[in-house]
Length: 97
Image (cartoon, rainbow, N blue to C red; front, side, top):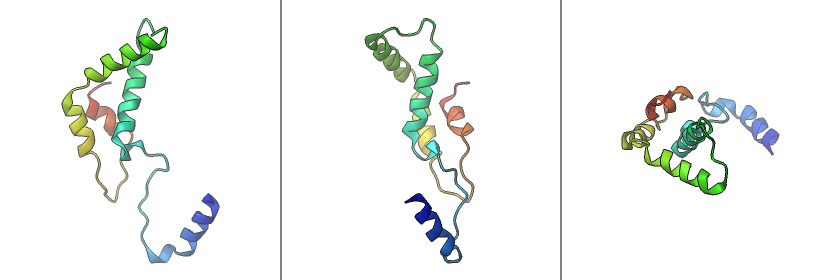
């Protein structure tokens, strides 16, 4: 199906202007950026959670420590412009490095 969609767009390319946008853009869905943040922080923990209960506790602790402004900042990043968002913006919005 992907090839037929691409073919249709090529046939009709003069009828619209396509914005350059990455195929896999989690910037369009703010929760994906938060899942990525949770994943990175938990993977960096020492010691690592050893079972499902410890993992759930670790994820909850990380989630509860995300500042409310991080959620607001991620929502502010969602806008459609002629330039695609970069993957660096969400990390800056969360305030972690």
